[in-house]
Image 1 (cartoon, rainbow, N blue to C red):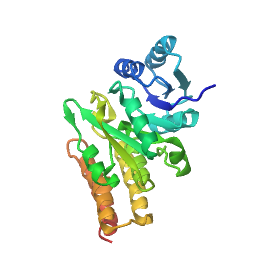
Image 2: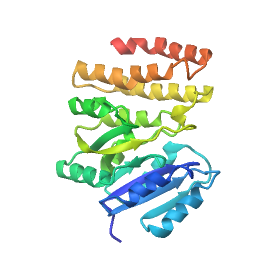
Image 3: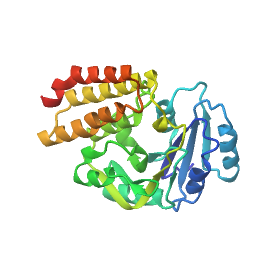
Image 4: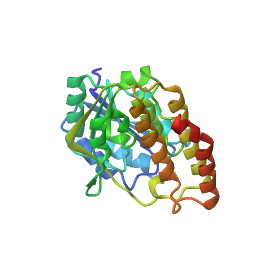
Amino acid sequence: MNMPKVSVVLPCYNVSKFVDPMFTSLRNQTLKDIEIICVDDKSTDDTVKKIREFMKSDNRISLYKLGKNTGASHARNYGLKKSNGKYVCFLDPDDYIDDDFVEKLYKAITKTKSDVAKAKFKVGDKYWKTHELVKENYLYFSSEHCSAMYNKKFLLENNILYPEDVITGEDVVFLSNLVLHTNKIITIDDTCYHYVRREGSLDSQKLSHKMVLSRIKMLDYKMQMLNEHKFDTYTDKIIFIQQHITDQFCYNVDPNRISESDKDLLFKWFIKNRKSFIA
């Protein structure tokens, strides 16, 4: 059996109405030597049925059904474990990518022997700024995890996985861990990941108390990394604090998304950890 050049991992949960654009863009990829790993996280809609329909016309797709709903982190980690490619992308099934996304990232990551190759990230008609900042310093890679291709060996050797006890914000923990281990991220300007903000997604919901607790767990992970890592320069430490911790904290205390009691809970977390920000 020939190993695919790239494994594409899709964590799937109740996305039957939204997956067509992603599967169309995967079918149209200019690099054909890929595998598409779908991990169904115990969907209650027609997600599995939809994936099986795509499988009839594309033998590169495989489907794994989890026995219980465990969250996107476990689904991504499970997909990584099942992957056969040397390189891996973690995409969300309700978004889509340019037709040359996989090929351009693959060529860049192999040519430069980088740990990560990152494409632009677009929401509607606007490109997010993270991509340009990463060119200045890889520590700015604090969001847009789906816009990249990763060297699988690099991830596994450094235990860079998605935290399975974090149900929202797991992607930014993954990236915080990643930037503290990598020395080489290549950015690609002429291909793009398209993020589709839809009603009902975690990003559009008001945060429940359970989600707020998960966000605090996410921040705890980042604080542990901050306190344990030896940064090359003080500037690097400040960038990590700003991009990976304080910016995330500010995002989470949005008064339109959380209750007053949960806002107080987050501020208590900040006060408890404030000394680490200035040490």
